[in-house]
Length: 337
View (tube, rainbow, N blue to C red):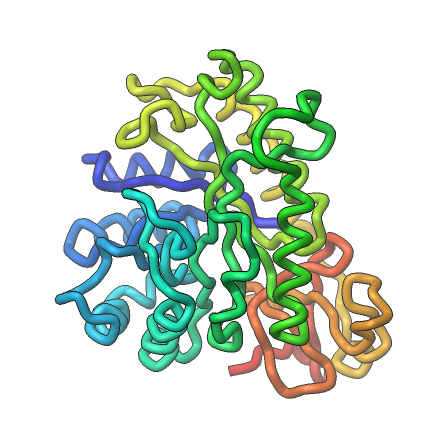
């Protein structure tokens, strides 16, 4: 699983140091808002130099001239430095930090990006309502993944069963079920925001740190989650949520999450097993006999992909039984265009 982190690069003058510091604690991905301009370009260059993959969120403040089409065209200027795009942000809720949109409009925004960036990895914007029925009005075929924001959800085994709104794993299961019913095969889940301030835990930074780590472990155990991004790196902008405090000093949550990120990064670098195209049809997807023709796979050099054996289509995703897989065709690594 990918473990990245959210940041708002506008709060940092030294973007190179920001990227280096995030990479040094084990994160391989970074998520921020698509804000066209020279400062964004410098941020993306700093991330590339530090070895970070970037997920950019297309939010309300990303719009160019209020136009979906113009925004997608603007994105092409940065696409060579961006690993994935998140289309919309909390579109299923009305709040000051959300971008309330009907499912048809989120779909239209996604189609604009698909037109301009046909090979891009597009993730449906993070849903925060907890109601997967909102997906019924979305054309999921436009997207390569679905994002959730799991605020107020409990990790597996959390001692206080009255805390929050429910269990994170159950929430993810509900969305996976809805996606399979609408889309006929699973899309990976991206947890693009999770977290809480210490005030939600009686002011204890120690309990907060345990929560951040337990949530990450819950996502790792869940077979449908591809990536998770704690919110967020710095405290600036949303006080109390930072892995760093307002003085840019590490909070205990950073120590816990960093240890998990470093472990994941180390395991990702291990040599991957090889599976040939001919073997794909014999391997059950996620050990589920109802999906006997699929396999979770990672194609080296071309980012995370999903190999679907009985069709010519390849869709972004990663892992089978927790292991990366190299796909071969005729004895050579297969990298679809």
